[in-house]
Amino acid sequence: MVAAMKKTNPSFLNGVPELLVLRLLSRQEMYGYQIVEQIRVQTRSALSFGEGCIYPYLHYLESEKWVSSQRRTVDGRNRNYYQLTDRGHQRLEELTGEWERITAGVSLLMGGAYAA
Amino acid sequence: MQPDFIGRLQYRLLELGCPVFQMRHLTRELADHREDLKQAALAEGLTEIEAAAHADSQLGDPRYLAEQKMIMLRQSSWWGRHFIIGFCLLPLLTAPFLWLLFLLGNLALAYFLGYGGNSKKMIAASENPAIFHYMHMGFRLADYLAMAMVALVFCWLARRAAVRFTWLVSACLICSFYSLFLSVEVRPHNFSVGIFLWPHWLRAAMPLLIVGAVYILRQWSLHKERQKVAI
Image (cartoon, rainbow over all chains, first blue to last red; front, side, top):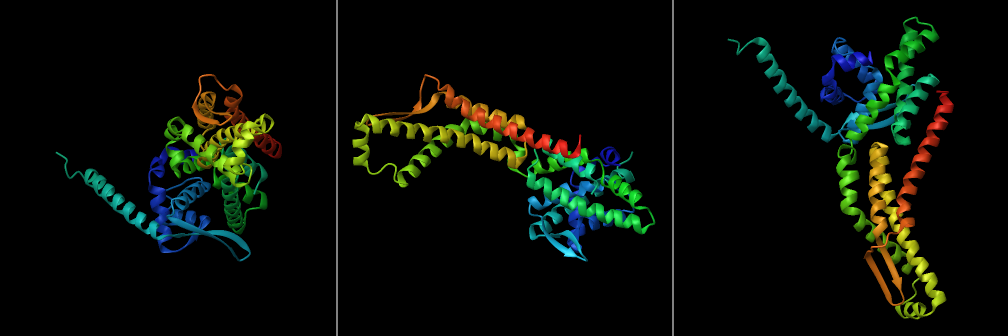
């Protein structure tokens, strides 16, 4: 599955995981498992990847201070809850703008707006 | 978590030079995640063994995971992103200044701790060959310590940024080269710092000894981890 991710989702390394995670966390705070679940449900399993891969991204986002984490015990289970920071909101706006620009461009091309 | 999964992950992370704190941070969260996956699989009617196997397969390949962690870790710091500048160019440009700074810091510390006394005492001491011998040793110690501190700064930065060991070796080799010719010379009533033409081989060995110690320590941790997971 991980190998599949490397082949089929190369963009996963180019800002897409960042965008997805930040977008999800902008709605509510979540822990890793929840984030993966939400990505699966909301993308209708279009993105498949080794679930462990989410943590290096989360730690990276945390080191950039776009998200913050807090370890809490809920129902007898320890979990690291992640939430978006103010800087994270700004970053999300930037990424969303970038994403909309790219998808609009790709849609134009795919729709054949400039086709002869 | 299945011991061989976490063991393989930890081993690979150590092999790639991941700081222990980061390694624990990742494995702790993965353990939580695996437990969630296992519980979900059990709820679907799988047996304990099947649920554990399912959880492991969902988490992915531990080797790839470790590599991803290292990529992200390196991306998250300036030193990790600009390792050529940080561990080749900057040591070339800054090592002599850092050495001088640490040397003066060490001497100032010794002075404030009362080892220098006052200037009159120092002048008197420098005229006494027996006392001057100890003074000379003190200066030499401060000098060696300063060069060791420069190498340790780069070791610390390399560890923090989780860069490849090669870059740490490169920084320490540069420090070693400077150690050959940069020195402090103390004579009665005369103290000079600068570049000297005769090489100080023992001094030059200091950064190399430090990088060697780091390497041995790393190999020892890897050996311990290897025994734990029986790789």
